[in-house]
Length: 91
Image (cartoon, rainbow, N blue to C red; front, side, top):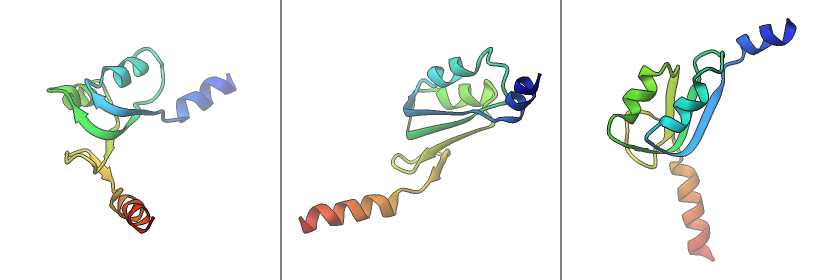
């Protein structure tokens, strides 16, 4: 019983490097019996309708890095990339 209570309190986070269709994230949630997940993608490369499909499937939030402009951008990696470029340039 304790395991079931704990599982209900946990909010899953689903991640994917490329969002594309969103179905990978959606399929992981279906039938899991867990609260609505937060879907995290590195690059907001959604196929047509995929973002809307994730939201319609019950995602609590869809979050991506700002590497590709999109409404889901919430993770700013500008400084990380700038530092990496500077390191490469300095050799």
